[in-house]
Image (cartoon, rainbow, N blue to C red; front, side):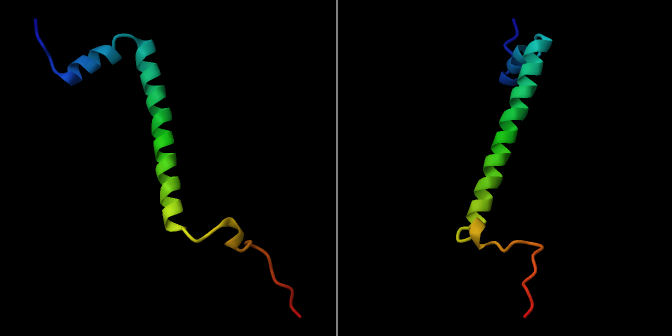
Length: 66
């Protein structure tokens, strides 16, 4: 009986059949996307503490000349 390591055990659990592997990949992609989205949002909020949507000028508009 070989004991194997933690990674070998995980490999055996995840790769035992295609449905488990596909579920693992899709779940990992979804959670990874959520983590990146959360991180970018927090970084944006940290860098723009005083800025709000109302403070950003509308691009592409011209002021009327008098």
